Length: 287
Image (cartoon, rainbow, N blue to C red; front, top):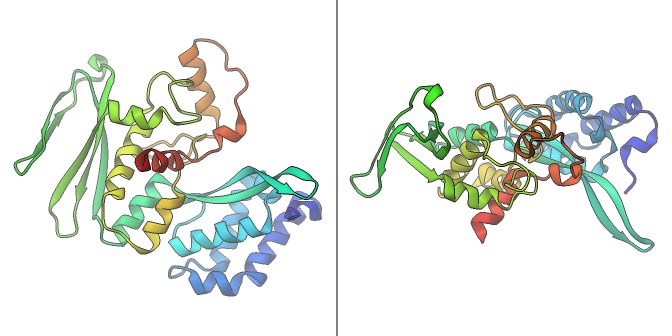
């Protein structure tokens, strides 16, 4: 399908897409939207997202419609709880293979947790990283416990694991811990953040992995079940877990690659770097 961006300049393309959201797609978006996440809200959010990522203007209308409708259905704000990500897709046609840009909606780490709160799966989820040198101990079973006293940052060693503490609906608390070995088994399948590119596991990767692992173990339905299938913080983007802010696409990735290799970063496969982290997590959990 011809990309919307071919109608003219980027400004014209943006206007054309907003018109589709507000006119052509509005009835269907509003019919599926969670509460006030209507077409007007989605159109304004898309305009901001396209300013930061102009490649969205090249995406096919069909993929934009699906991505924006998903964001509205999940009740997540574009650019905060969910990201619109342009993906290069190979399409087979009568004249051979060709490439086209498609848009996908990837719920963020914080977006997934917000949905879990909203659906009463949890009242709060807090993630932490455990390092060598920390006073840490845990035990599974009916008398299970988890204790963690972090050491001084200057004495901090290598990462040894990560955990999430979950406050449940009626105030009871539980936890889920993953040793670094289990996290690394998942990271090893990453096309961008694996050991081939980055020697040490980024803390945000470990925390998101353990949070998503717990969510996948819970009975769920509706919006969050659907969102987990599409889940992501983009694999080519790092997230500041303190602020929830997405660091510039690929910039953090290139910096960490360079640090791991102790040399200037070489060319990185941009398409691979745009794949979703959580697509890899899902595949690892299914295998």
